[in-house]
Image (cartoon, rainbow, N blue to C red; front, side, top):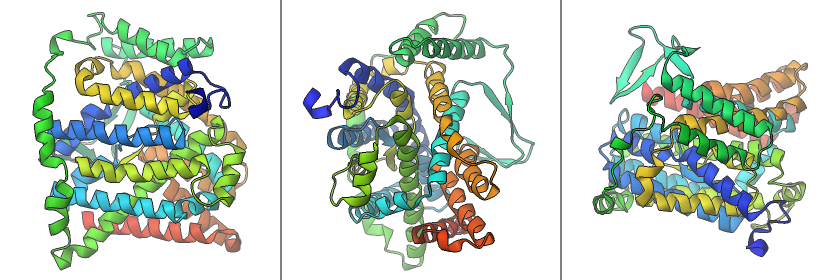
Length: 474
């Protein structure tokens, strides 16, 4: 194990990697229950989606751990599943089988741009100031996810300013976030969980993040808090029924989706735009996560950076990690789920000390075990895992110190690449606006020659994407 994962070389141990893998899993286990609900709005069988989510996560995460030897986990991406269900199927009228076919094609495109080094060229083209902004922005985003998952925020919208899409409420900019009132047991419990996490991390208790999750979960059994109800836990997980339903989604992208996807010539432009939107979001979500977490922690060393820029094939960790991410989407589409991507919640495991692929292997095994342990995994309250994201987000904010905020030509694109991604709740949108404003500022300051050609192309593609999405949703 030492020789395969190079634990000593990465200054880690087996026990630390196991704790990190468990921490990552519990930070992202919510996707097992959320993804079937979202994709179920398209009439996909939810038990099949549950298994597809597991198999896609296991496959992608194992490749990440065993091939790339990095501590990142993969699963169907939040935001991408919403795009799949509420835009592609609900608004554009595609069947879920056709949507799966588009996701599969998106995965193939991602494989091609990885093999042909397009992804590497994009990373090399990103200015250092924007890379630091993305790193800090990931921190803000992760912390915001943690605060929201802990239930510490409430959102108010004016009457008549929101719409209901099959139970999902979408509000306009009149919505205002606020701190919740500390007058319910659940909120008090969330505060206790945050205090436990911060105390253990500040005191540098070994395995602080995972220990905090366990302690917080045990406290959650106190009836007063009302966050764990064992009466709702059923040991009958319906595994047989789930595997039976999986036969409906497995391969549906080919048997029912692909044959009809391009049959209507008038819809082909819309199909291509949708595939492009899937691919663009997936690609930059991953790049943002790698840049944001890999550089600061040393997972991707200077040697890796040099190998990425100068080598051919898959000689660097980043090369291998990008390839692992690119194939996971197509695998997920085969089983029956939306785009599989590298999860920003991997930062929780990295914050717990994960540095090698052993972390990913542990996370993948937990996903596999969740087929039979789902009743028990569901016991862990969101309030218990949310503080891990808050603490990791705080740690990642240090990337902002490398940015010259006093120079507006640096600060403007850095703001949009960093802060804006949390406000939009979307990594790729933050990167997109950062790129666009970087190009704009350089043009305004008569320094357009300093903009890498790839940034020009990428910025234009993002603008086209925004326009196209606006048109198809109108």
